[in-house]
Amino acid sequence: MSTNKLRDNRAKVLYALCASDGLKPSYKMRGLESAAVYAIDQNGLRAVVSDTASTRLRPDRRNISAHQSVLHSLTEDSTVLPMRFGVIARSSEAIEKLLASNQEAIREHFERLNGRVEMGLRVSWDVANIYEYYVATHPSLRQGRDEIWDKNANNVNHRDEKIRLGNLYQSLRNADRIEFTEKVKDVLFNYCEDIVETAVKREKDVMNLACLVEREKLDDFAKGVFEASKQFDNVYLFDYTGPWAPHNFITLDLHAPIAKKSPLTTINNNRR
Image (cartoon, rainbow, N blue to C red; front, top):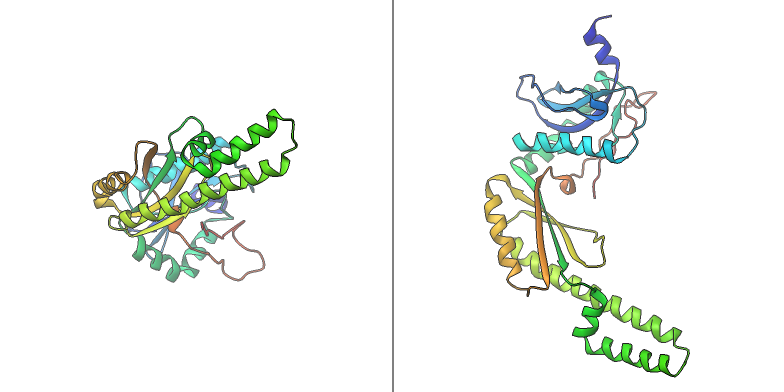
């Protein structure tokens, strides 16, 4: 059996989809398991893959880092539709069938995302203690806190008061997050085409935004972030990152052709 035939029959890690120019690219980066990264083309579409002997990929730091590294390298040169970590196809033929059976959806995404990248923006409270900051800036919270201190001094049970105080703090902070996010989005929509709110992960985070930006207008986007930041005082930290592949703007739900066995271990790539 030839080397190419052996490669065709191996399972494939799928990193991204992109347009094919008819020329076989020579990728310099390495993928998961240090495997060579290469392209499989079908009808003007391209899947970027590497071979694997695994049937399931562990979502550990090394593997996820390798996956992201491939995507970052691809994004530097062209528009790609990133696949989520862990998508494995059974063979080259499975990839070709996948591209053929999902042509319309894939091309629609390229039309919408071509020449665009994702920029991330995180805004956070730049304070040592976010709760103490809210106590200092919200009289109702400060009054409730002081009343509990007085009861502590008199050995009075105040469990219910503490719960109500905690709920008030959460309510005030969440209301500010909503208000401030809308203020920032109102500005940034002048500098990007779409914005997706992603979950905040830290107590001090005000917002996490994913912004779809034309690659040629990245400098304008940076100006937009600065303009938005001028609405806030120096308690708020604005930190933007990118450009990245447009993960949060991919709504592809790839369907394998009907067969006795699905050629993909997993094919749903909905990022939202």
